Length: 445
Image (cartoon, rainbow, N blue to C red):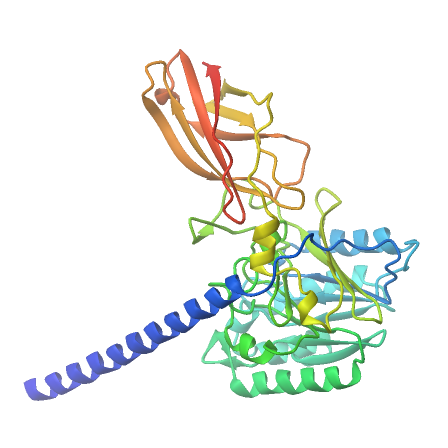
């Protein structure tokens, strides 16, 4: 028996060693890929802007990660029609693409509720395509449930006004996190077919997870297999979700050999702090973003982010020509080059107000980022009259909440701030790690 246990033990440790070794190799490969992404591309004089004579020939709305927040879905569809029914350049919406995780665990009730909202709000003459997310793939019969609910295959190729749009769910392989090699081969072949007939037009691909090392959130919430498929396909403009990372962040667009766009989330944001994911700062549940995609017949694409809750556009990206990789401006390297350190206004102030729990809500004037960029986080310290630091914290900013409030607020336990005078020191950091000059602001409690 002891001999058998030793053999079994050696086998288990051998398997574990192999798994750890493979994981280590994969980590090295992924790190190398990330390094290539950061270093590639040229620095341009300016970032692109949408010319006044841009005349789209198609308009598509993409949204993702609704997680049963179907009221937000209804609002998004209604607002999209309201925005574009009378648009001077191009009227109407040609298609809606849902990029998965419309449910919690992919139950029949989740499907029924989501489909009901779509049928009540999406017009009959508007194309509506969905793909599977990992939450739907938790259910073993997800393919059957999906195709019965939506009336199309889990992997689709749809012509929208002459533009090829590929909806890719993959096929579950072992777990909801992986897809089969055969489904990736299908995707590759369909992209090749689309490019062969596209002439100068882009090829749009929609799926749930990000390609690895592309947009904000893609170092973890990703499928590296997609990178192998998309690499070299210049015409591909890819749209994905899964991470819940806000589209406001300028890292939500990335160009390497193709274009990737993260389309935010319709339910609950997630961010990272010091490269650690899974951060949920105050207000993270105020999430309802969709992506507006427009393209002309000559290879130009316009991508805009829209916030449903505030009813405002918050970003606008223009791709001059998907057929010419040398014009790709939204590389990490180029975007960082055009970012500058945030600046605190000269009239910045700080104040504290006691709340009902006896703690203090401390607020200060927010730093101003470069145009088109954001303040991602703040490092804050509070010192008393003797200069002793009584409070210190690193906060994610609330850039994902669009409102007119120009202050940032946080709570300090009342016991740390007895009556007296204090100095708040704050440093702002941008998405591309540009740091402001620290500002020191006096306040009293």
